[in-house]
Amino acid sequence: MAEAPREASPVERPPKEDYSSSEAGYVATPQKERIVTDAEKRAVRKLDYTIVPVMAMFYLLSFLDRANIGNARVAGLQKGLGLTDHQYQVCVTVLYAPYIAAELPSNLLLRWIGPRFAMPTILTAWGIIVTLQGLVSSYAGLVVVRAILGLIEGPMFPGIVLYLSGFYTRRDLSLRIALFFSSASLSGAFSGLLAAAIQNMDGIGGRPGWAWIFILEGLFSILMGIAGFFLVPSTPQDSKFLTQAEKNLIQTRLELDRPAVTPNAPSDTFTVREIWRSLTSIHVIINFIILFMIGTCLYGLALFSPSIVNQLGFSPVRSQLLSVGPFAGGFFCTITDTPTLRPVTLFFAFFSDKYQNRAIPTIIISCLAIIGFVMYLRTTNKFVAYGSLYFTVPGVYASAPILSAWMANNSEPYFRRATSIALGFIATNSGGILSTWRFPTNEGPRFTKTTIMDLVFSVLAIVLTCLNVAVLYYKNKRKQRQRAEILAPYADEKETDGGLRAWVELGDKHPDFVYSY
Image (cartoon, rainbow, N blue to C red; front, side, top):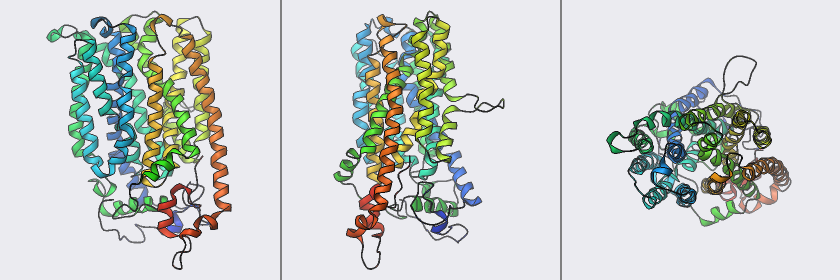
C-alpha cells in the first residue's frame, strides 16, 4: 500500500473490537457488532462519489465497445464487408481468446504497475483500436482488429473488481460492483440508441453508417481514457478527495476486514502456490462453473439482441431502438409499491451486502431468467417473445455482480484473491465464446436449441448456488472445530494465534476467516 502516516485519534480510528463481526463476514471474534461512525460513513461516501462513477464509465465503455459489433451488424456491417454467418461469428469469437488470456496475468501485475497508470492506459489504447475498427474494409482486417481489441480490453473487468476490493470491505463490495456493472445494462441501452442515430451518418466522409458507430464510440473512449489519468488513484492513500483522517479510517476498515492488509507495504508476495490454491478451492471451482453458464446467457443477449429483435420482424432502425428497452429494464425496475424506479441489479446487490447473503439474491434473479426463457420458448407471438427479454436480461445481468463479489469475498490473501477474480471472468468470457456460435441466422428468430440451453443453464445456476452454500457452511464449521490444530504451526510465545504470518500463509483457510454465503 502507499506510504502514509497512520496514527489517528480514537475518534478517527475506533478500536478493533468495535469493527469485528462474524455476522458481517469479517474476522470471527466474540466481539459485538461494530458501530459505523458518521466520519466513516462520510469517508466511504466520498469513495462512492469519486471512485465508483469513474469505474462505471470505464466498464460502460468496455462493454459498449466490445458489443457494438451487434449493432453494426444490423446497420449493415455483415453485408458491407460481404461476410457469411460463419465469418461474422469468427469475428465475434476471435476477441475472446486473447481477452481471456490477458485476464489472469494482468490481475497479478496490477499491484506492480499501479491502477492509476494501468487502467487509463488500457482504456485509451482500446479506444484507438475501436476507432480503427471503423476503417476496416475486409474480413481479415476485422479479425485482426477484433483480436487486438480483446487483448487490450481483457484486463479491465477483473482489474476493476480487484481495484475496488482495495477500497471497500467485503461487506460493502457487492453493491459497489453492482454500481459499476449496472453500466453494462446501460451500455446495451445506449448502444441501441446511439446506433440508431449514428447509422444515419451513412455516406459521410465516404464511410458507411456502421463504420461511424465504431469511430465515434472509439473516440469517446480515447477522451475518457485521457481523463482517467487525472481521476484514478491507485490506493485510498492516493485519493485527492479524502482528508488524511479519512484515509486513515478507510485504511483501518481494510485492515480489520482483511488482517493480511498492512499499512505501508504489502504483507504478502507473489508465489505460484497462491494461484494453485485458488485453482484447487472447491468454492472457486463451483463459482467458476456458475459464471461460465451466466456468461453464456449474458453475452448471447448482449451480442445478439439487436439481431434477435430484427429477426422477429422489426425493421433495422426499429430493432436498434427496441433493443434499448430490455437493457434499460435490466437497470431500472419498480421494486416497491411507490412510483420510484430503482435498479434491479442494485437492489439485489444492496440486499446481498446488507444481509451478507450471496445465494438468495442469485437464486431469485435466476428465476427471472427462467421465466423469460420459458416465455420465449413457448410463445408464437413476436410481441410476447420481445417482452420475454424484459425478464431474461435483468435475470442474467443482475446476478453477475453478486457472483463476482462472492468470488472476491472468499479468497485471501491478495494474489489468491486476484487469481480467483480473474478466474471468474475467464469463466464468464469463455461462456461468451460459446454464445457466439449459438445464434446462426437460419435458426432465428426462435433459436430453440439455444433457448433450451440457456434455460438449463439458469436452472443449473440455482442448483450449484445451493451446493456452494453447503460447501461453504461445511468449511466454516470444520475450521471452527479444528482451529487450534490449524493455527498450531504458526503459534509462538508472543502470538498464540499465529498473528500476521498465519493470516498471510493461510488466507481464507484461516479459522477466523468466515466464508460468506
